[in-house]
Structures are given as C-alpha cells and as structure tokens.
Image (cartoon, rainbow, N blue to C red; front, side, top):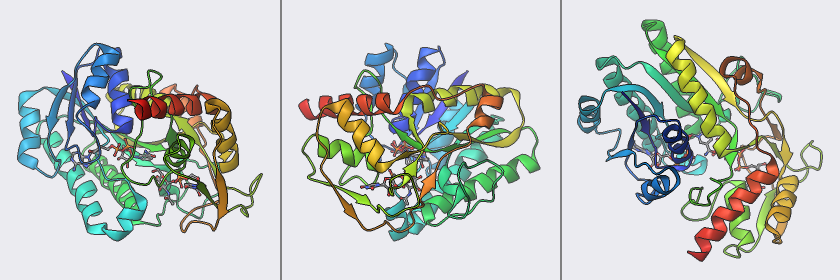
Length: 334
Ligand code: NAD
Ligand code: UD1
C-alpha cells in the first residue's frame, strides 16, 4: 500500500516526501518536471537513505496516470501538482485552467475507478480574496482575484461536490499561507527559474548578490510599519502538516478545509531584518509602488488545524531565514 504524491519533486512536495519516507510510508511520485528537477530524487535519497518510486507523467495524460494505479496499490493521494505563478496565470489563463483543473479531474476519476478515496489537496490562502479581515478562518466567504486563485477555489468546489455525491470520499483541503525556508540539510529548497515573484526567493537572490535590490511593494499600508504583513510558515512544518492531514483523512469522511499557517504576521521590513540577521548579509531595498492584487494583512486563524489535526507550526521566522540562506548559499557555491 503506497501514498501517491503528485508534484512530489516540487518545493513543498519534496519536503513532504522526506517526512513520509522518514515515518516508513511507501511513496510513489508523479511529476512532469515542468517546474522541478529530477536531481531532487538524489537529494531525497541523501537525506532519508530511501529512493521513492518516480514516474515522469503529466496529469493531463490520463492513460499513463492510470498505469500508476494499475501498478501500485495506492491507498491515499497528496495532490500538489499544479501551476502556481499568479502573474503568469493572468497571461495564460487557459493553460492554468487546463493544467490545474483537468489534471485534478483526471486524477479524481482514476481514484474513483480504483476506489482510492483518501485525498489531501494543496489549496491556498488566496481563496480568502480581498474582502476578509485577518485572521482568516475556514468558514469565511471565499473569492479570488486571478486565474491561479480561481483554479484553487474551483477545485475546492469540485472536491466538495464529489463528497456530496459519494460519502466514501475522505478529502482534506489544505489552505497554505506563505511557505518559506528549506530542509535543514541545505539540500532541498525553493529555487525558482527566472526573476522570483515571491518575497523570500527575491531576498535570497539579493543576499547572494545575484540581484541588486529588493523592491518593497508599498510602505503606506495600514500595518505596523506600512509594509504588507503575511503568515510565513517553514516548509518543513508545512510538510509535517500533510502527515497529520493524511492520518486525519484516513479516519474521516468529508471535504474539510483547514488552514496551515502559524497564526502570526510579519511585515516585509521585519522579514528583511530577520533575514539580514540570520545570514549576516546586507539586503538592499527600495520602496516601490504597491503591487496590484496585494492585500495589507494576511494571516491564519490556525486553531482548526490544532483541533482536528493536532498540528501546529513550530519553527520561528529566524529558523526560516537561516534555513533559506543555508540552501541558497550551498546552491551558489555548488
Ligand atoms: P512547485 O512548482 O515547486 O511544485 C509543483 C510540482 O507540480 C512541480 O514539480 C511541477 O513540475 C509539477 N506539476 C505541475 N503541473 C503538473 C502536471 N500537469 N502533471 C504533473 N506534474 C505537474 O510548487 P510548490 O510551491 O511546491 O506548490 C505545490 C502546490 O501547493 C501547488 O499546487 C501550489 O499551487 C500550492 N501552493 C503553493 C504555495 C507556495 O507559496 N509555494 C502557496 C499556496 C499553495
Ligand atoms: C503570493 C500570491 C498568492 C500565492 C502566494 C504563494 C500575489 C498577489 N499573491 O502571495 O496568490 O498563493 O504568493 O505563491 O501574487 N513583496 C515585496 N517585494 C517583492 C515580493 C513581495 O515587497 O519583490 C511583498 C508583497 O507585497 C507582500 C509580501 O512581500 O506584502 C509577500 O509577497 P509574496 O511572497 O509574493 O506572497 P503573497 O503576495 O502573500
């Protein structure tokens, strides 16, 4: 009996695979490598001493995907695979809808056929939209501002409908806040291609001298220092949240949305300062205009995860910054 991890060579997927292997689970990864590298398998093996089964398959290829279910007895699925760049999703929405939605429909149809109905899905805090006030609770009204976010909300709705139609489904919809950090070995982390869109990857590139200066998008928000506030969560804490979510899904029918965040908010300036202290590097920045679609404050009410999953984030912002820096420094010197 194995756990299928779609998108398992990606940033969050690879850290989750490490945690799964370390508790003795059998892991089968499906990834088309559109945003990750095959080398990740070596890194996972270096950390855990185990090599997961890997298939280079696109979720849009239903026949190949079904082959995996024929070959292995899949007991649960953690579904990370998807495209995730907000700006890109505005430019090529059809690609995003096809990849994320059709990919998920293919997966669910095959799961139904093989009577594998334990599913943990990667949703996002982006589904809370622009009109709620933090802390965000799972029962707040949902809305989105870009095609990427809309795919997440549509998939949540599809999965809720699936449960209504068949109460044998055991689904957990995990709404991640802002994952950052890296494995403490420095072997796994996030290294986006091109110029990073997200804060930490950009800060990391400035710290190692690959980019010159961070633009801080707005210092006139109604926040502690005027810059945007977010709930940054260490990727290893997030990975551990998936272990708890799989265990929960095995025991509970439903389609339950659960936030994975720390419940704390840090401003952009606080993150820059924490990163400078952790790395002993100076991070150049300038204040730039606000970025379209940004909200002032976003952080989780993390109490449902504690109650249902018996999980809470452990790692501090300093550990997140230290581990991020160890990873980027190692990569830069490789
Ligand atoms: P990632 O890009 O590092 O990992 C996603 C993986 O999925 C990649 O390895 C990619 O090659 C693969 N993939 C994409 N489309 C595929 C397809 N059609 N078939 C097979 N493989 C495919 O991203 P991540 O940061 O690890 O995010 C994982 C999931 O979590 C995504 O669904 C993302 O939307 C969601 N999420 C991420 C964040 C974040 O800040 N990183 C926040 C909220 C939600
Ligand atoms: C962004 C996405 C969100 C997605 C999440 C994870 C947008 C509007 N939102 O969230 O949908 O789920 O990434 O992929 O893109 N910042 C700077 N300078 C930078 C980069 C960021 O000042 O170069 C600021 C932002 O204004 C924000 C904070 O840093 O206040 C965090 O930004 P980011 O890392 O992009 O995450 P989110 O905007 O929270």
